[in-house]
Length: 384
Length: 73
Image (cartoon, rainbow over all chains, first blue to last red):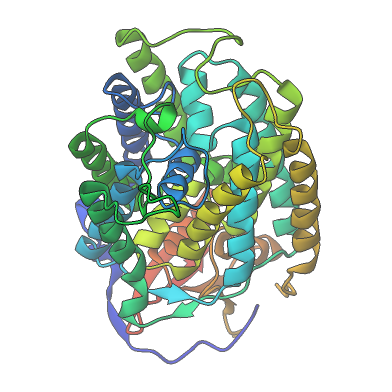
């Protein structure tokens, strides 16, 4: 796209970018972020989070959806403080480094749909890209096919991007827009701490508005302070370093650029060591926590997730961090994930430890068709 | 002298700014290419992409919060 140079005054010389900011943007900055995630996630498991699920952006959004009554899977309902911390940590980093920039308008409804589809794909595999890497580092070899599927989905997304796929330009928005997601997270934190129970069903039994699992993965969690603190730290670091598990593979395929990939390599290596140190490494295909061994649908579920994430511009973690720095479109994607989790459980699409549900594979195929149609039709003429 | 080529990637999310830039850079042997982006992430990605192929990048922050990158080779 070739245009006239706009007439705008030069505000300041960007070479004065601070040394700290420069460090986080360096290779060591992204590696340090991966190291922190790789240490903290297994510690969160040790302290109570579900197995190989120290952090899972998909599973945690699914738990939040359940806690808010968007689905009725009683075993996966909890307001995960890690997600709250991700948004607020990113917000703090963006404010401190003057990168809080409210914006919106880049096809929000498409991003909502991609959020839903990515969640459905992730719940057929049973994990987002973060958990796929953490499952691998805990010895769950079922993750290998999931990661291969993820890479295949990202590869398909790169194909569409090269063909001109675009969700269009975002524009600046008033500050209030950027504060919506952080404010919602504060609301969630209050709901977590207060756990209001004023709803009643027809028989007079307690019925929400907040639901917490009494058993199952939703009941397994580290202390709120630890989860929130880890989330805040990771949110801060990831906003600074632009850590993205999907961008890592995408940039490798698209630009032969290893930068972000260094972060996920560090994550897997350090989480592997931490799991061994904590006695949590258990290799094999069978008997892995919260996973199934159906290779085909582990693969295909993550093809859908990887494609949807790539079309939307980043992994679920990255979408959460972007929503914290004011990106209203990323926030809509995250809300799409919440609704997608509700759909995945209400329509019995999510897998269980026994394997895929009867309806999950059909949903994955339908989701892939939708993504391909979007990939071919949401285009902007590339004139360069 | 020919005006520098300008890539307007404002408002676009990653990886589009870097993709558009790399396409323009590979279409010319050298000279000056100016890129407009409006996020620090896009700024850093474009610079990284350009520097990989031997271009030098100078950045200026504009008063509207966007960045003008001048790539030369």
